[in-house]
Image (cartoon, rainbow, N blue to C red):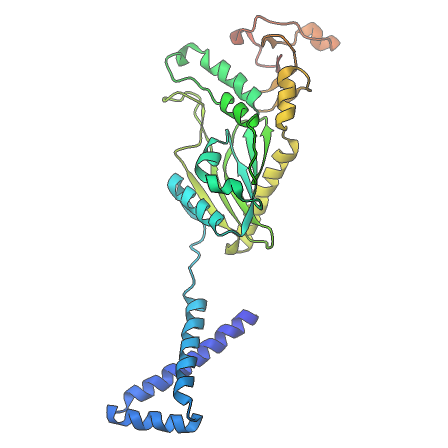
Length: 323
């Protein structure tokens, strides 16, 4: 309401000045001096300077109020536009918390977060990435299929694992959690510490069960993302809030690097990957094998017998336990 009255006051004053100017221009030029002299006598000796000052202030207020950048609403961005808009938002300095829906984290840490950002002590980046043990399992199953032998190998788990064990001596706070399902969302949410202002960049990852270019079956680039700033109002804030709840769910239920490493070395508890119905269990000092539940073990609850590890012999109706 206060902002509205301010705009009304500025608009009214501007109209008065515009009206005076029009009336002056409507008179013959030889009368302009007489009209201005009469106005100066009415306002005093400093009237001319006062007029110039008022006109300058009004133009400034008008430009600030009505010529500010127009919010174009929800925008659809390609990969380059996504990077440019992300960098623009981060460069403003008001966003200090970045939540990232990721897969391997490579794009975020090489394209979006620049080298200088690593030395910003007030910046915190939280990344969601896929559990590298589950990623490795899916890679091996995919790469050993005969139809994929001639394609570029799917090899993402090593990059995820390498980042997990990478030392981070920088001022910027970087925290990673690892989810067990398939990659679904890509993008980031930026939040300000001292206000409710935020902006979300969100897109979807494509699943290609038989990628013609090889590599991972989950493709994030090239692609598009939606840019949703909270300044658009209640609907935009609701979308951002819903995305935040999805992020928090994976954040709270995800594993830390230490927990995934513990399972990798045989010291951790099992974790289930819902997307593939895979159960990862620790087995120190042993190669990966596949265990299938037998009818007798299912009835008695005993440990299932080991199979040969051939995925074609696996009973897809039950969970696969990888040790």
